[in-house]
Length: 364
Image 1 (cartoon, rainbow, N blue to C red):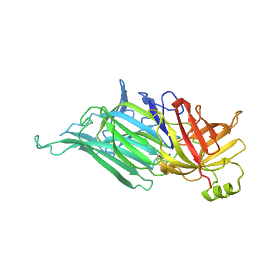
Image 2 (image 1 turned 60 degrees about the horizontal axis):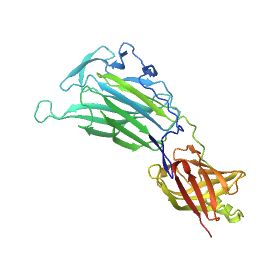
Image 3 (image 1 turned 90 degrees about the horizontal axis):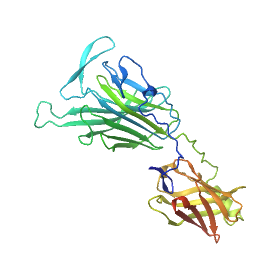
Image 4 (image 1 turned 135 degrees about the vertical axis):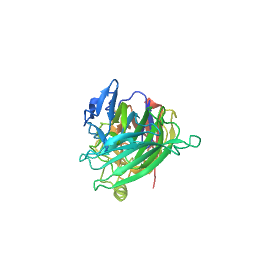
């Protein structure tokens, strides 16, 4: 069961397919292989043996046309033994060795390939010369590569539990929302290890695997999930002053400011995410509901004047079809409707989820 976050409600859709995903599962043709000698399929795995002094990038050929997505890799580094070093050769033919090679993923790479994020994993020991006090750990590092060539280390975390510290598989995941980057890792269960603010999200980006110098990475699974539902345009020309000026001259009894009154919810399906102040503006087909204030869930995504919902007239008096816009700007219309009660209450009903929320009108 997956959860879709709404600005007012959090619905858990058990069967709805409102969000469509492009998923790559053990189909490694989607990963762009640069050096076929170093990277090849071995059974159910894609193995990349990097014996050079620079990193390999295996980019997913999918261009992600969504600002929110999730990228997940399950992989193991076969060159990850403690007290071992691995031979590498530079571009000039100079030979050397490296211990504790790193591996990980890149994401949010722009089309030019000169601006991207990377999260790398690297194992090490506290004291390889003392078997009694020595402890092995993994360092997870989030890095931002900028177009000017600058590389910034954004966050770093050391782990000793919940992960495989040698040759076994770990799952690494980057979850990107409109304003956050969530990094999770684990051998059996994912645990979030880094959360940071995301810069202005971009459309048309790519993701992939990064094999550090000296690493030999075995990829078991590559999964890219993103919504390819078009983002609804929620912008309007309304401001708080324009709304007030319009309402001062309105003769429509339903137009005006409305606020949260109460709710009747099936808690296993949804929860309230804010005590909202909204504005109802009449249209030819019904009413537009304009967001004013009060969001506590995804509050950074909503600004005064954005379209929050739309009421469309039906053949029944005082009964409207409801189109609600969730926090990801995706419309929710599944069996949703609205009705006015005594001119001072607005019922927003979601019968599929056995729930409703009521708004009351602010009277002069």
